[in-house]
Image (cartoon, rainbow, N blue to C red):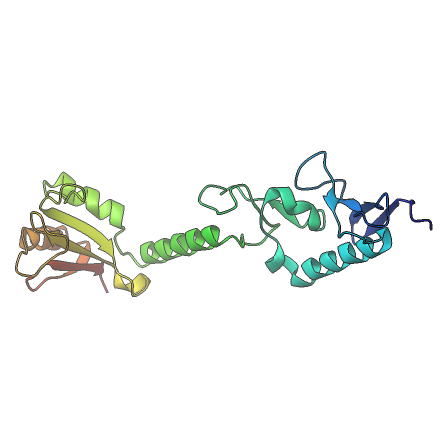
Length: 222
């Protein structure tokens, strides 16, 4: 094979094309599956690298990705050509990802960190609901309809806030009260939490724990 002969071959489902450098000190250029990060352009190998050595490098990179299996599938859509056709799809949840448009393994959860966080949050919400615990949005809306004022973060006005507990699905949520101008709930300023507790107990839907202070615990009935 002469130094000027291009290589076009198949490897593990990918079509690889390598064009050798035009001189001894140049660099080969290549595509994988007739693609590169910037459409219409080729990727560049190392200076002084032969076409054969460039092909070996490409095969090694493909081997490394395939060895990782579904766990190695992710990143920008523009680099998806490195993965075997049929093993990836564009993730519909591009917003919030560091990559923007990105890929995920077909038939498996997305490996993007933002998607993992979102999936964990959704799973926890479903687990809480399955146990009969109130959700933060639903309980907030219920208390607001009853006439309890919500605190305003920007103006630091007095009012309630519903927050999820961090101890897992069984722990339910808590209603806290912020005093006027306060940046955190304080037991010496319980505000209208006694009324909140009485209202929720009267509804009879949840177990309500309140013995004074700035926090009402709300969980599913046992």
